[in-house]
Amino acid sequence: MQLPPHTVVPVASDERVVFFSDAHLGNDNTSQSRRRTELLCTFLAGLPGRAEVAIILGDLFDFYFEYRSVIPARYLRVLGALETLTRAGVRTYYVAGNHDFWLGRLFTDTLGVSVEPDALLLNREGEQNCHVLAAHGDGLGEGDTGYKILKALLRNKMLIGAFRLIHPDWGYAIAELTSRTSRKHTARHQDRRVEASARTGQALLAADNELDTVILAHTHTPDDRRFESGRYLNTGDWCSHFSWIEWPAADRFVMKHFTDSAIEKL
Image 1 (cartoon, rainbow, N blue to C red):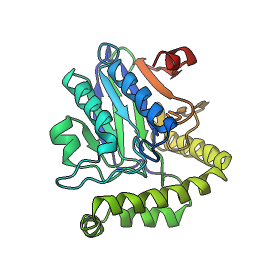
Image 2: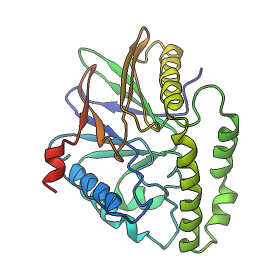
Image 3: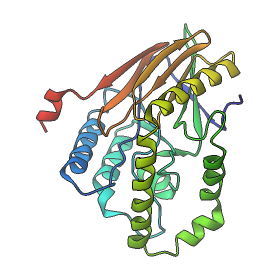
Image 4: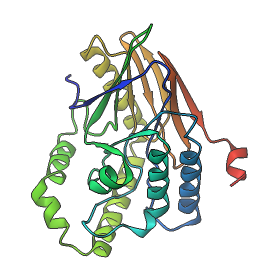
């Protein structure tokens, strides 16, 4: 198995990195969705001074499409929180997921977030070098040929241009309908998805002898496994687990969750 296309990111020995994913913001207008937004903004506001690097591993939004002159109102609070984060000096990377791969210049030019279409390879150098591959995880591994074809089509520039001609209200309505159908399908195969992701992580580790750790997302289930060839972790989600991974030094990784007491303070 080959590593996916990736951007190399150097990490200093004393820099702290956080990984999080799968908040699926904006998929409805319920109190639960508004609560997720509140929690995530609180989390982002607490990162300066706690981390030097923040990595979003996809599906922060349930759907995101960047029009040239329209910003979706439902995301304004989170977009503002991201800009505040980068202005505070936290280097922020956004690896596209399967719900939000139409990210554009708003993130790079206005918010100061580096957008990566596929994956990051983080290299921490020091007394103990550590190499970490981080990706959303969709379309990796064997099988799932139909989705891989669909993914290539959805990233086609001609299709993106055609979709941009649709009024934003209609565009987001179409996306919400598609997303609901997708959630029903994946819910029926959750256990299978978790195990498939772990096998993908193991295969990626075996594909590169210098790779120490693979961090994926997409399954919405926090995971931490050690294989003979290295360590596999999954960030979980911000829908039910409110989980993230902290990487403070070398090969030390810590899975964390928002506690009930933290949630009650909001």
